[in-house]
Image (cartoon, rainbow, N blue to C red; front, side, top):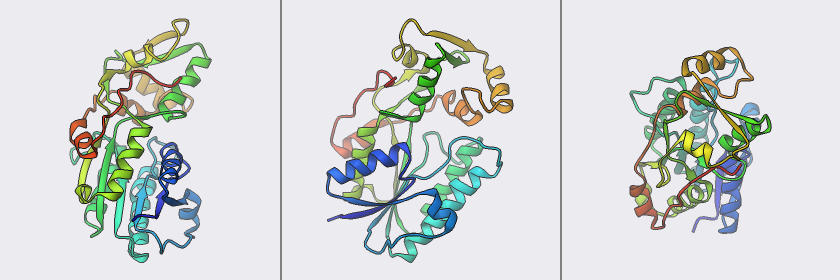
Length: 267
């Protein structure tokens, strides 16, 4: 029986929803925030069996080493915490599109974090999620802010493909992974069954009264580099236009439930 887990990034969108989900399933969680890691002060973790590592950063900041500090160095700290507290299992949320051939700084940092976990000696399960959507998810919040301005900006053609998964399905997959040895030392795409172009997803999510404006992709990157208030960051653009899709059948069959088709955002 699993009664206690540790969750880093517990205040984020996935973390908040996962804690509620696990609580309903009688699993209590010890939340770790970024302040715990900054101060290097942690609550007792001795009674836990699994560490669910959600903490990470997906967009660039003024600090050019932010991907290294958060996605890589923080993962090293998590591994050390597991070993110090005799936590033998770690579940990690990486990113869809991460591989040894990754070129973006974000994907490179995520790949290096994966490698640290795989070489740690801990039992691991790595999920590579596409956009995880639900109430208050990051993509929906971005589009909702644009809707308030009566215009939604679409970079490039907008025809690049997304394969989002619902937060409920993501939480259920993580919960099943906590209890099943079939997930040990394996990596899974965390994607939904429905592939959709970004443009189509946006059109189904907003009122016809809201204007859709396309912006040249090169210009979008220039604005992302030079304007912190631009609607998309550089790595957000890299992820959006990457056409990253995966195989949902492998995970769906292992979890033995039917994944929800995502047709639109919750704007």
